[in-house]
Length: 252
Image 1 (cartoon, rainbow, N blue to C red):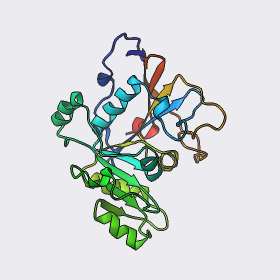
Image 2: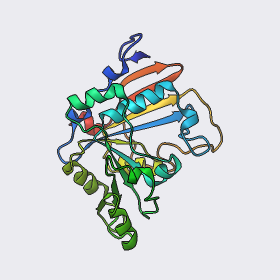
Image 3: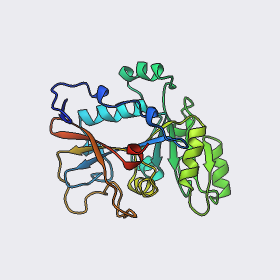
């Protein structure tokens, strides 16, 4: 892998290009960094999943960013479509987590309105790490009881989930660096509320065409455009790995 910006460097170790996000943590919530992969024409999925957009370099960055996180925030639809399980940390990244005082694996936090999830799935039954489930307080009482048997439930806000308060609750629970892996609706909700500090975007050398994939915020519009600061550009086998800082980070 090589770096194209801010200076050109050949054969760089990408792990040295991503600092510990907890060093930039805001006062009252986790540092939130979003990681997404897109085609050249902006699609985030092919036939409903991201697999065809990925590459060896993208998978390396994916696991690298997970290794920096205390928690992984993900929407329920993404959990279902991508068949999420307990988060895995590559052996090469485990010493770094230990040196930073982090537990062996980050905790998954699932955002859901309906609580229509498979509570018998490995994500909830693995036993090594208890997931969070973030849900509006007005959610179905019977499903809330089911969720509480296998997850730590954060029920805040009516009729919609109070995302800022949910993030404050995660911070109080020791989640200081929170990696968001989508999907588009969750990305839009976080960005629209000024709750994203960093965007890591892989651009796959692929064209999808037509309506063949959701965009990183779906069809949602932001209250106003957000200017981004480009922190670095890495490249491998035609894939570009872009890291942007958002205004919340620049003014922190």
